[in-house]
Image (cartoon, rainbow, N blue to C red; front, side, top):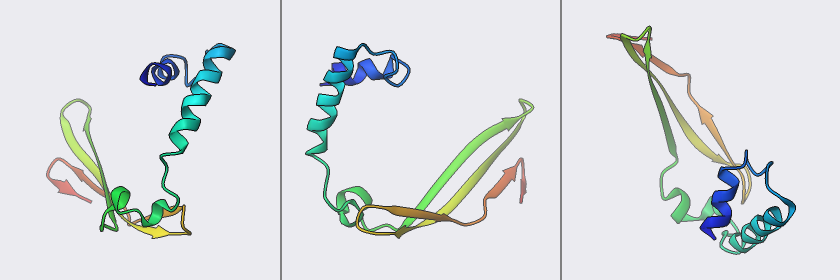
Length: 99
């Protein structure tokens, strides 16, 4: 199964696959579908008990000025399969300055 999925990662997202390789990958994807949970929003294995999302990106401006941008958000269930993440305004830190 890994072999077929690795083919996709080395083929421009599957665009360069031959027809028979594409069919193999589709077959594997269909098999994997059986492992999906019916209501992912309610699954504790996916989200646990947390409803807070954090994302942080570090960067270096001009090669010497370190900084980071961080986002904090909350999960909002739209229905039994879809979730929306509502982010607060981003926090920017450049050197010792915070914005």
